Amino acid sequence: MPVTNNVAWDRRLEAFKGRDTAQYIATVIALASRCTACQLPLGPGAALSLSVDITEGRDLDGIICLTFDHSICHLQCQEPGLTIREAAGVAADPASVGARLILASRGTSGRDVAVLAYTLVPNMVFGEPGGEMTSVLVSALLNHGFQLSFNASYTEILRQAVPVRDTCTCAVAASGTVQLHVDGVLMHSQQLDTRCPDDAAWLEAARAGRVLVISGDNLMFTETALQLNAAARLGTLVTGTVPALT
Ligand SMILES: [Zn+2]
Image (cartoon, rainbow, N blue to C red; front, side, top):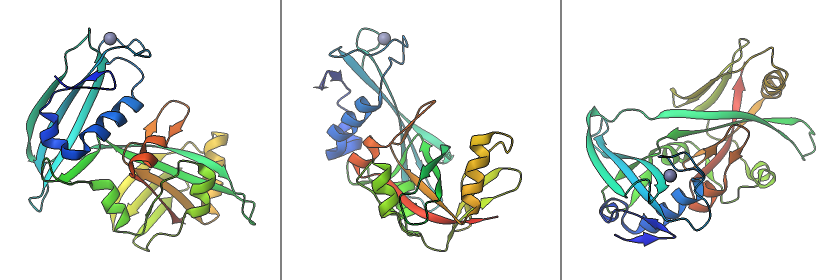
């Protein structure tokens, strides 16, 4: 049973992650704070275990898609494990989760910038097991003019963000519904509350013209914050500005 950074894992994982295995484990650890089994904090230096549920499916073009659902536990709470199952039919769509936030622009405009951040849970990759695996979400967005960002600082992201291709739009309805479309496909949707001052301020900033979209794999959303460090470090953070349609 291999152990990396105090985390015991199932050796069969290597057959799926190939040379990305160590990086995958490091990311999973970086994102975990509580034991999935007992819900207590993992604690520094504790012996931990990694369990991974892999779902193998094929998309409409017959390309293999894998989703990795992982959990970190205290080793005493759960042994490391790995399960593999085949998706029934076409791979199920992962859920899209996100948040809206406002950044103060340091540019000449001085305007607030409306930010729409989202990811897919679980992250979905395609390719040959053990070979090069590519994120479904990251490659879709890169194909439409989004750019990789290797910096998790909002200041840098704001400075580097460029307009994406005209295949991308963010519809901002008077009702507070916000919908990001890429190439005619609804990628992400949020319902804002027009009576909530923070939401109203976001809607006003968005209606000024553009929405900064922050997306990719390994984004971590908590009750109060958005963590981009892991995504930036792993090269799975993408950003771009999208015209707001009102
Ligand atoms: Zn535990």
